[in-house]
Image (tube, rainbow, N blue to C red; front, side, top):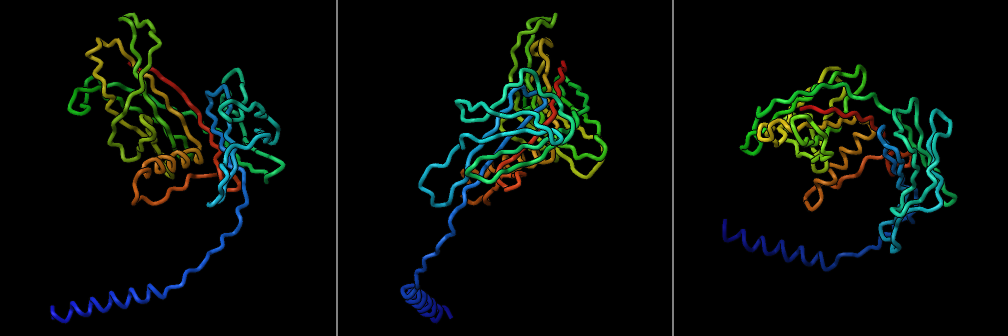
Amino acid sequence: MKKSFIPLLVSIVLFSCDRWEEGIARDIVLPPHNPQIAASLFIDSMDSTLSATISKTGGLFDTTKTGVIKDAEVKLYQNGTLLHQLNDFSVYQTYDKFLGNQIGIVNGELILEVAHPDFETVSAAQSFPEKAVFTAEVDYGGTTFFDETSDALTISFSDIPGENQHYLINLHAHYRSGITGQDTSEYFPLYLETTNQNATRINEGGILLSEEGVDRDLAIRFATGINSINYLFQLEYRITVSTLSDELYKFYQSYSAFQNAQGNPFAEPVILYSNMNNDIGCFGVSTTIRKWEG
């Protein structure tokens, strides 16, 4: 059996090579690309400046460099009434509007509309989510972080009835100058560790916490990487929680997957989430609240 198998294998290889030599090359003509507007605007309730990125798409074999679109009309409507128009084109090639004060939670439906004479108008709608209702408790020296004693921080969220819960959590250490608690204005971002199954890391320190379709309170526990006892309690934690709209959460989720796929030749291609009416770009909103514990 072994002796007859080798000639058979050789004949298969030779036959395959012969068929390969007789192969036919075919030219595939791709349809022409129709450039479209790619618009992105992310607004948080604490923002005092609105900044939108407006660019155009390019074809697979376009030799010209794609980039931002100039002279676009970028408008933000509230319940059908013009709220803001982003006219300033910055050195960072974004369309900006300085508000002076924080925009806060804008009631009703917001619509982003981007128009340009050379492109079809695009738009998307959003509504600000309610701010998170949460409490925080520090367990000083209550856990370990890479085998070192660490504070444990537990954040407990009250459910928002009928709404999906999507939170982006960031934590900073704030060192005071003495027992009196004098403010040093120094904040250091922390890399959080958690075993919570509903948590996803994004960027370097932020944590996405999400639960859909279930009405219940949520809680998450972190190792902060700091042992406050070493600082004689001259330290406090600044907790920043942003409640994300469903669309903004999906964008962050896809962006996290996109980052994780970079440099991995075996990873599936990741398409960033879009809610613009041409499926290119994203308009998202969030509501942020901060607390200090320590």
